[in-house]
Image (tube, rainbow, N blue to C red; front, top):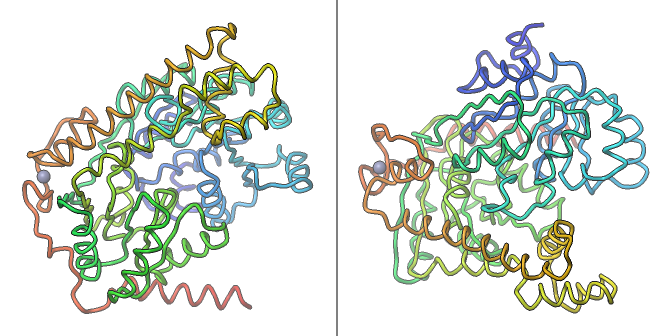
Length: 484
Ligand SMILES: [Zn+2]
């Protein structure tokens, strides 16, 4: 079959989205490819389609278990049985069996932490690997994102599994980060496809208040009026639940909270209900949305500012994948910057913890140290990563403290840039494009609160949306079929 036939027969599409075809061509050609495609264009097709034309397995490194499971589920719906996700949820016997049959799979999804394990690496070494895919490749840059040290080792892993061609995928990465990705993965014949982060059907609005109670009032006033479905992001788990309740009391019918503290079953249920239109509004932490392939999201509201433009652009990119007009609204109250700043300060161990950790590590058992110093998982990962990096144990604490300082400065600068964007006086779209070093074109008809926009354009008329109705039907049918 040709790639066009596979597109139709396996995936059910008539044509490629922007960026997909070029990327797929280069992958089939055996080049190392970096593709930055805007959220919502269907990045996964760029490796899923070549998997049917290349010989060997496609390995996909993915940062989140929920994201992997969504992808696996979607491939299964398309009829693909040779797909598996290797993650910490696989327990003893199933894991053993899966590993024994690993060579039979076409798609192998794996977390970077799992990929490091010797049993898995050894198995992969003996297999024919057609393509090594890094999803959310911006995690490779160690400075601006969550601290995932195993992402930094993917270049080495690549060599160990026989140097297959690489496809690195990302939605938002500044040019320096893209350079980081290519270098770290040891690109050989690099091909780079970079498309604009600009989603012209998503308007950007910021409303500023003096006090957070005014924000709350405004949120409760707007959400009942907006066309739905929509997502509201909060930076605290507690607030997602409180606001779901407030909204219910304000007449928003199908609303639920979603956060990482809920159990997996609950989370999957809420995702499914949202996907099939049973739920119209989700109050969520940033844990929600990655990998959710819902086309008709009409609004994304931020009740708290994200810590960086990259996260903001990714999160609002979940709106309007059907191409219809959608709105991104950020509610700001004076001093909101303190929230992301505090998170950055707490992310890594403090100076006294770093000193104590390396002083104690020769004498005490590790579990005891972690307990005594009250280290979080990320903090421990950080300390361990650098303890392997430096040979001279004397100098190590000093070095780690220095690295921490650099990392914090970079992250704080990102908060500052996000804050600048909130307080800008020029077109928000233009300002965002400048941040990603893109050139600016003309404003769309509904652009932003600083150039041109009609807020009521996003309000619902009283007629129930056809699409919401249809989704609701699909859900009932699915339920009946499953219960049978
Ligand atoms: Zn504008």
